[in-house]
Image: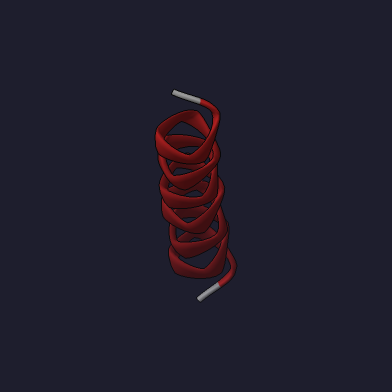
Length: 25
């Protein structure tokens, strides 16, 4: 479960980064 949560958090971070990149562009 811990690994799944970590992967989920990583996916969230990537999504947030992509969103920020779109906002900046």
